[in-house]
Length: 197
Image 1 (cartoon, rainbow, N blue to C red):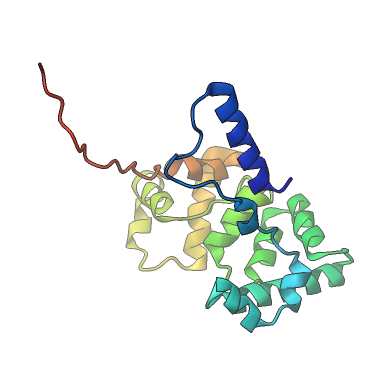
Image 2 (cartoon, rainbow, N blue to C red):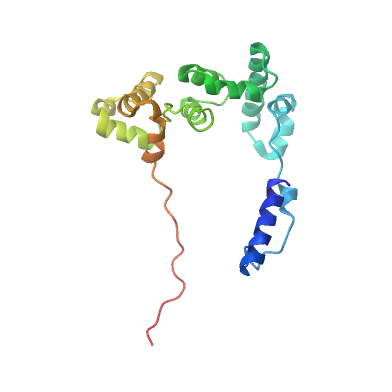
């Protein structure tokens, strides 16, 4: 079954097994499978007119998505892969600099996004997405001279990544995960007070 249908089945099974409702009783039952769609293959995105992608809600991103898909299809053909997805998967076995270079060639992809994709999707465990938290740690703990840098140029970005790779080795990318604090949990203020009787 589609993921949404499987989720609905699991919720129903949980209700039956525990007797407790798995969904809010105020929310009517609805077939959520009608709201889920498989992500289209790269070739479909490359062939879609930008206007159609905009109509689907991609807005200004439509141009970037389509152009990136076109480039992935071309790279797949150039390198002899049967699909853009197969080309992307082939990046898993390549050296990090080659992977980053291939990702940066895609429209709308900058260094941080390339490092995120490389780390979280392409098995490049030494990719360091330099975000605000990583930057602050690098300046504070590993190279205080970085604080004098006026902008995060490609050379400075790579320098920060190299600091982490030298310090933490081949799996340095996972340090970024530990360096990024979790989003604060926002709890609503209590609406009632406990009264001692």
